[in-house]
Image (cartoon, rainbow over all chains, first blue to last red):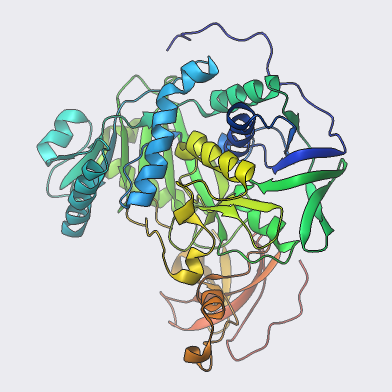
Length: 404
Length: 93
């Protein structure tokens, strides 16, 4: 796909950390960069530093399967993810950057009567929330995605699918580069290779961070560290309902165009799209055990490939080129945790689990507002840490599409 | 794939096992007496260290017994496995 806009001459400015900022964001991935961008753009808070322990967007932002959709079940989730999808739809103009956003449609397959019922329910719930959603019978699935095997005699027959036509994919790296560059132009300092090793405290309040590149004081500290959130929070004695797991993905060799949409299957743990270059990009289920090693067990890949080959017999010609894993922070209800914490001056945005990429702009938008105003953005309010005490969980295991 | 040493059956492939999360979390003696915060802590809060972690495994395709392991989550290396009635062994990463 040719770039629709001229490439910018300069990317972001790589900054030396100063000794003090109004806001320090820990984590230079998609969510951290989007938060910095919207802090500067929406709230005029430009005295912001993004600290990244590795290289910019080299964690889960480099490892996800780039799927974007908003077809979640509950009102709270639908509102948050749809806000994000609407931002995606304007993001190329907003950032003046070709993000290769492709709203090619996302199919979520149903393989059992229980799947069918929950899928139809979710379609109706989506429509009530103003989100585009359709239920497709097997022959309609075949018409929309001709390479899917919908014959009834397979192990996990396709009994139908939900379709969100506005769903699709975007080029993950370009999203990070665009957000970093525009944030940087607004005055945000982006500091790579600065790992947070501790926090500066003043009584009960967090007043900064210790890093491998020196101490940095901050009016507010905002974590956007995905799988490593627990490691950071534990330095403050803050317990969070998170478990970090490897989530694996893979690409095949280059193929002629065979797959024009995104196909996801919750039951058989496979989701696949075809990159513009031609690789099949597939994601697997999470590895069961906790792990930070950015790799998983190979039997998870084998299981996923078996399911993919049954769904798409044409894939038997494909060669596995490369597998990898990212570390995802999974919450008990498969929903994120966004907001202030019991520790004054400290904010968290975590628990996105297997589905954070699609939320990048929406997450940044509501998190920036939450940090700027010191209270949850209305769309973030249902996703507070307190919900695990009140019991007001937002159970999205059905819509999250990857087994948690 | 991990090679996991079941305390009863010996070393077996990971696919024979199910994962059970953090070990040594006892059911509260008097759940009704707990505050909402304490109940949430029991129900939802778990350690999530990058390093040695005591965790439960179930030998689903073998002896069908639960046991505990200490595993380094930074490397996935299993440092020790032990029966549920044994204390957590002292092992380093």
